[in-house]
Image (cartoon, rainbow, N blue to C red; front, side, top):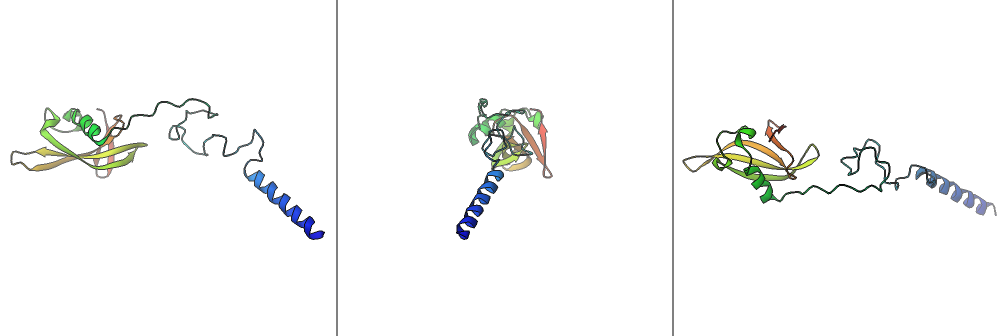
Amino acid sequence: MQIHRLAGLAAALLLALALSACGGGDPGSSSSSGGGLAQGSDPVVNGSQAGSSSGLETQEEPLHMMTIDETLTFFGSLNPANLGLEGESMAEYSFYPTEKAIPVDGLPCMKVTVYKKTEAGTNSPELTFLVARDGTAVYRLQDGQAEKLDV
């Protein structure tokens, strides 16, 4: 009889500890299933609006992530002067993707290396850029530092 009573008390204690760890089951308590953000989380990174207290708001349309070809077409349409390159057109350059998923400022970026076309038919490397896959930003990469450009 004494063993059954101890086992019952142990089970009740474990249940109480489990409920207190998950917020006690009260509607107003802080439970991990409430749709809130973890402490210190950035609401924009987590896909919700700043100041949002409930998961019932509609989320914005996700940005279109360009394919490799679309990213290179976008990059080729830019003005070389805005990128720090000489010339009138990006047609004077060849550019190739080297990496596809480098995060900068929370954006997935594609690394693009630009080569100057020469009369000898060889390519001479000029600069390296990081192009946001949603087309919202271009960064010049120098000495391991990404500098956002106004394009």
